[in-house]
Length: 470
Image 1 (cartoon, rainbow, N blue to C red):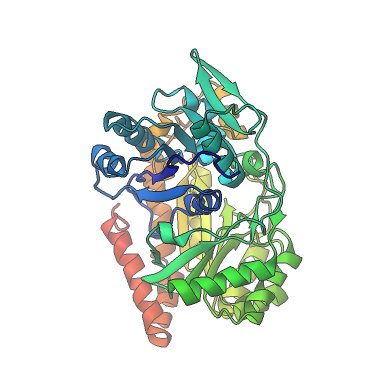
Image 2 (cartoon, rainbow, N blue to C red):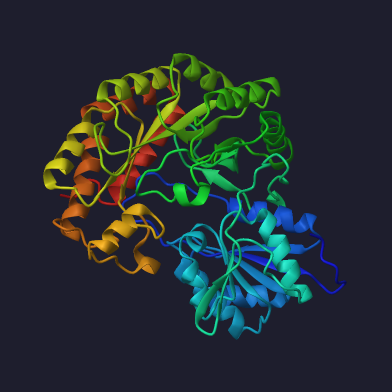
């Protein structure tokens, strides 16, 4: 929707700072991909767009002063549960700095908890995907038109929430403009084989078919996966390499392997276009076999994340039952092809006990992976487990400050916060200080010195964060 008025149409897009991590061994930085996609849609619709990312030590007032000097007509703030507090502070500072245009919040947290619209700093909340809604909403607000026909918008009137029709999923991903990389600075990959290399996020699909009770994907994608034309994916990847100096691709798909035929087509498109860039992807092990792993390796896959969540076996929360033997076989097959394996686990589910935590420590001492990410269960609003905890009378902590994956976010029924944090360190030590892991790191130090150095950096960061503390 192209704005009809000739008055300025300056939209400030804002990414609030995330809290510093505590205890995470793998250091990752991400560009504000959602805002870069929204920025592309707004620019196509005729808006002038600038993006601000809050610096690591920058106070909300200082950031607001910089934005206010540009004199935006409206502001869009993208928030997760971990940085929504910073987002609200920035919005309040913008008001104090004289910015009077509409203040619109969007992103994952806004979609999951639309009552954010009741906050005094927020005028409107956009739920769901913003590339279609954003231009329509900003255009209507700046032109003084009604917003009732725009789906996925929540706002407060007289202290009560009002909403338009439910948000819609974007069906034609190929029809979306490529992310406007000009709006934001590049980020860098800090992982094995790609330490300090310029990277960019790219997507080949959106959504997840699975319905894990702890995850927001069922709310965000309604159990559906929408796929993008593989040729378009490869064309964007080629441009990122040629025009933006990108040397590492990060596929942001919830499950890159959700449809095997599509994953294969994307890999073949990358090969056909001769993109020749290493990449990261994530997904479940179900669709991986030696043929798929061969194709991934040839297409450039250097690392993938397998979200096991818990050691193999039945779980009432994750819906990911599988055998340890099958997991071990797939991980070995991947590593033999030069693909670094990143395993993700979650501790602190409501049924967690010290016995199950000890079993997790025992499991990670055997798993043949290159990374371990160990996060604390976080009951995000909008998930089934959040509702379960509420119904059970279990206290959920301040979501503005605790929903960062690395500190307790609710009162566990039987385990103290200190117990969970202590077990997190024990499990990290069981993995990173195991003879198997140290042996793999030592072997790579001789055969692939750069990767061996990356192993050393990873372990040193862990030591600084207390890996060796008892």
